[in-house]
Length: 193
Image (cartoon, rainbow, N blue to C red; front, side, top):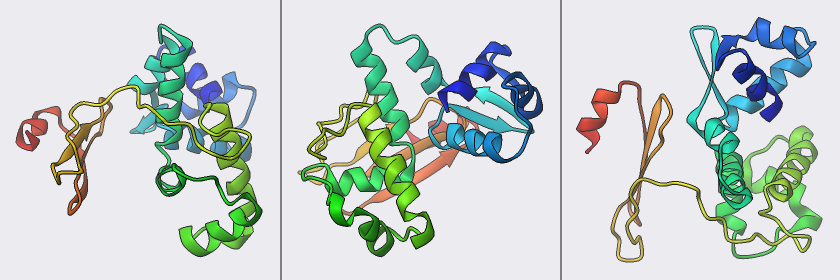
């Protein structure tokens, strides 16, 4: 996924998928489409009207001052995938049930059985790559590289986060609220405040 985002950046930060595929020596099919989908899911690029754009998250990964800061942004990208975020939320305080992990994915997270092995491998290898999952299959505490506003949810106060990429994703969380809004116009963020 980073490879594809690097390619988009080398084309000036935006390009068509055809020119990106060509630069990578690929055609717009199969492998390239999977790579494109992954880059979008990880929040490294966006697509708008057939043009690929690098995101602020990708830029932050590239210009991070320290390896620790870069790892924080890579973790943020990893947790951009909704399933991965759910898995982390459930297992952040305990070891992954590695012996039955594929079954857990199917029964508790609605992953199709034919995809369970692939999803398990992608999740485990990705979590290890971003230094979140140890050899004991326990998660390290993940610190997010950035967040806008956060309040203590133990006292039922609202936690709010706003992404910096279009569309803006605004998320509100508390014990009784879990809302995610996609805002497509920067001026509409005033309404959210």
